[in-house]
Image 1 (spheres, helix red, strand yellow):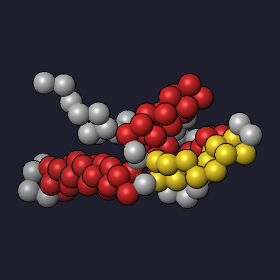
Image 2 (cartoon, one colour):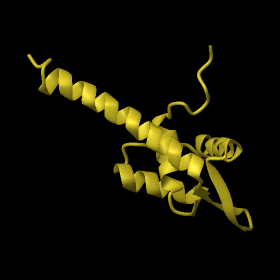
Image 3 (cartoon, one colour):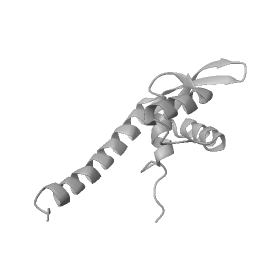
Image 4 (cartoon, helix red, strand yellow):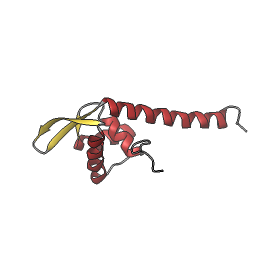
Length: 107
C-alpha cells in the first residue's frame, strides 16, 4: 500500500515548511534555509517551487499576498500539525539512539 503523501518529510520539505512559520515568499526561502542550517541544507529552485505548489494543494500553506510575480505564503494549521508530527518522529529516532548508545543498550 502506498504511503500517504507528507506522512514523513524530506529534509527540504521540513525546512521549507519551517520557513513559512512567518510570512515570506519563495525567494526568501533560499536565504532562510541557508542561514538556519549554516549552509548544510540546500534547495534547488525547481524543488522549492514544486513543493510550494504541493503544500498549497495540500492546505499546508496559504497565499497571503501577491505583488507582481512575487507571492507570499504562511503556514496553516495543517502545516503546523505536519511539522509537529515530523518533529515528534525525529525526536523518537533520537530517543532510540540515546537508549542504545547512552542507556541500557550501551556497550
